[in-house]
Image (cartoon, rainbow, N blue to C red; front, side, top):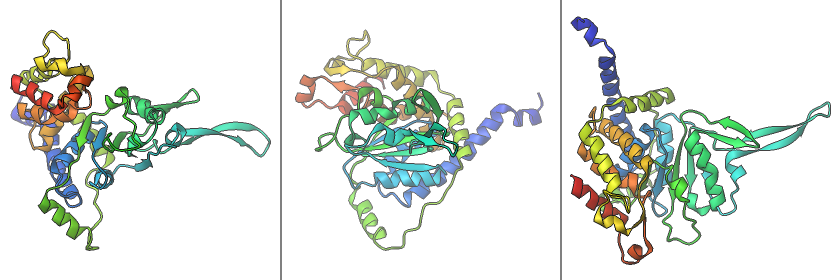
Length: 335
């Protein structure tokens, strides 16, 4: 094979595509940063979620720009976005859609399916834990299989399909904890904290001046889909694979290779957690301008991947154990 052939081979093309995507991601980060202040980690984790083809759960008190972030992401990625405000009286049909009986001009009657807001590319499920568990679970099939079944008929959802849900802290009044099966469908749980003083000062001035400009589209839907496929092609070294396996297995209570502190857990992360971590470390590397993940990517993404896939025993919760601390201990032991 001559030099010209090598320079246009599949590997060279993949590298060129990855480098081009890295440049576009830098533009996206800058564009989102013009509208969301002081939340760079949150922004990056949201980008990782979409670039990995997954769903994200943003947890934080009201007023921290969670809704604004989702709206901005929809614009910069060129996604068709819909929003559902979850309330205690929201029904599954309000999300999925329903069949209605229609009568034609000749008197014939037939059912017609009217699609609900879930038929979009980016669904914002606002305050998802305000709705009943029955309504929350209406999203399970959509999140896992990218389709919904109504009256025995399956309807495919648009591609790509992402759910970014916001959740109030469960200690607040009028909230229902999400079922464990649905929590596991979220690729990341993104904790949104208060901004620092400088960021809040900038936010206070710029958002009340009347001079803010709307977000601009950076990627098209097809480019996002291509980027998601590219993420899955990035190489992952054996050291990273072993680190991910060691981590998730150490956090499973009663497992042969469990860490001592895992005895405080009611249950630990399943295989889906390891799969999620394999995906997101690749996406984080790309966002950071690298073409392969490192151990730092595993350490940085592990809390967001694992925190909603682990539950403390009652005694450990009463003793003020924190899931984040257990994850950090497990990381320290394998680093």
